[in-house]
Image (cartoon, rainbow, N blue to C red; front, side):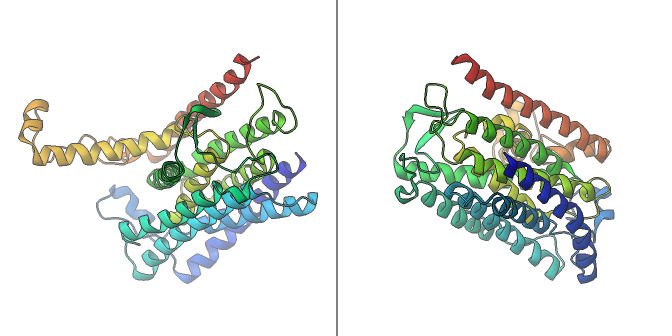
Length: 369
């Protein structure tokens, strides 16, 4: 438990102090954010704000974890190393996207296919290693499982190895893109991530207290390395919390795709490694809503352009848009809400989702008593 507190505290300090240094350096180098022309007009005042702040979040989290392990004289676990690989790997994909934007002075970085290939390579590598038999512990537990999970593994819902790898890939790419879509307003994604990773810190601590290796029985959790995962969750929570000081409105720096893809990947990694894959839909409910808004917007727009039957049934014209702008946060901006109002209300929604998810997690354990 001491490592959990150390990891979170060290990461918070590094992020809080290091982000100020990053702002100065990125400003000097001219690494400013380019703004899409079709976005809300109020966003054009943000042009030139330093971006790629996700580098600080990644650095603070990794250093916080490593320092906590060094101080407590504990070796890192396979689960922790895999999660850090996913976290840093997707951060690298996001960094390439951000660097192309600032180098070429445009709002488009990597092409969508190139970004998806990068995510797929990192996600597939993570999936194969997480399910590899040579990473099993002395009780035969691999970091990930071939069984679909909600609060625990669903015993009757096992998948063949190939399908399990594909499921992990879908979770990783889907979650990383969901956080990326959410990162559109000052502090929105950062604040939401603080709550979700804070929840995973609690989940991992609880799983460690009811660890099957130490407390065998019907109530225990058959996961691998829960306490080590709690250290990383605390470190990422602290790093996001420190970054939020500078990222809150008016933002002095943006995390960019470097941060959003990394945080989304880590979120997916926690869901997979803690055997709570479907619970992520509840804990990360805000990210789900925002992703669905984009999917609905695109689907309705295309259907109204190509299908006369669709236009007739729903009484809409060609090129109909369900929302004034997608993702969802921009729809409320277009309705006249202030950015700060949107962010705070979306944080409240995130808090409700996180509280519900933790409540479900704990209630299932109580129900087994």
